[in-house]
Length: 127
Image 1: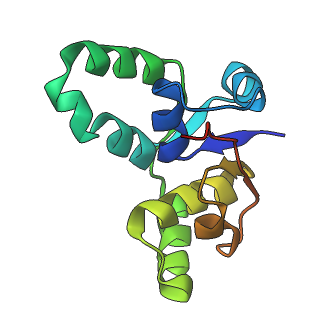
Image 2: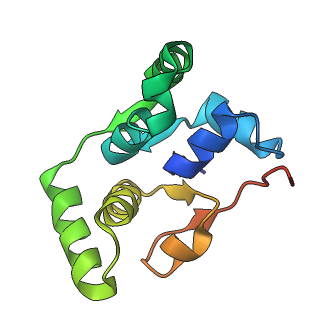
């Protein structure tokens, strides 16, 4: 199975909050993200104030396969937004997964499962 990581999983992982061995296998064998995930992740406000963390985040993303926004993905995202009124980033992530036959790895499976894509949750450490 191949996966597409949602932004929240990347943030949790970078902050040491994932509590699931599956994430290591996914990152080693199927580290794929949508271009919108790259934008959301690297645009995260905490990186602006912490250059060291920003450098670490950019290095982390450099290991990912980043799926660009193609015409097929854009058209599928449009349909998803029309049918489900999904937020644009979620629609692009779901469309990227759908077009490429990927499973979305997210902590918010309810945001994606009704959009016509397979999802997988990763355990997060409890506070």
